[in-house]
Image 1 (cartoon, rainbow, N blue to C red):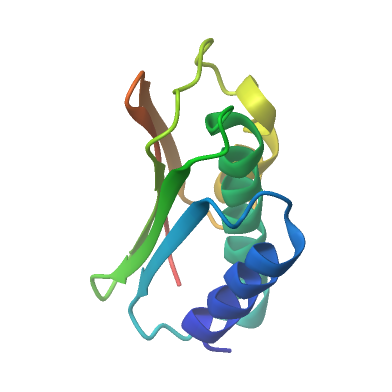
Image 2: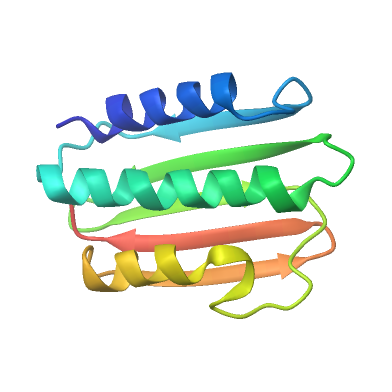
Length: 130
């Protein structure tokens, strides 16, 4: 299954279905990656959760940008969801529903999960084996 095609569909559905998307932009870049089906679905679920968290929590004035990127170095994929919102006030694995995506990355994707957040936005980076 093409991860790029799956994530394109996820992002397009978010743009159509989430309120306030007329003032929040989503940029997207993804290498052509064909992980096993269960890994593609898990990665897409993590990305969906991270994107909806950004939309819901990062932009109290409903104006901002989210950038989503996935790159494959041959052995590992690195995925990034970054926004230019207000940042996470209390940074922890449980902050803003980050426990679920963190658990999926670690348990199902056998990867790593990290968060960088300040008043200029939040960047979540996770790696996984395709």
